[in-house]
Length: 241
Image (cartoon, helix red, strand yellow):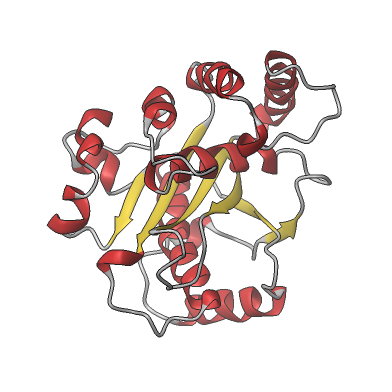
């Protein structure tokens, strides 16, 4: 299977930066990759875009976001997994922007590897390129992770990830939707307050394992830190099921 990864929010720890940094993956089995292309075509048509248009969630009008979320919600072969770094609940103001990105990536990669292990598969991943983030840092971090004790199921992550742009690899546009919908819920956007409406709509696409509250919050929507204070900041989480 393949995971397409993008992010939302600012990496910096400043008063003016977003309260959360979000990294999301759209997971697609290799057999469903052609259907993913068809999904993008359907989303373009539903949002009045040209067939070759590069989709960005944050550029859609409100009514188009509602249509797109409804289409994604009924796409049973698509799975989202998201890691949310709740910066206002961390006293790590000395973290660099690179560290914010890489630590969130580690949390997400753990969950992608578990998803693949459960399905007796391998996961390959492609990350959307990030401004001012050299690929060499990603490669060095991937190497370090493989030499340390982590919860990543490495037997199911055979290769380092690729880095690409949504204009060249259109399936990264699904990752943009996943990250932007989560970012909208935790950070808001376009001078609007945070709003989990669309995340509620696509909640059925979030990776779950088992039953109970941890079935979602340990897998498809992982908050770090997962402290009571952080969870209480987002009371709507309980409604995601």
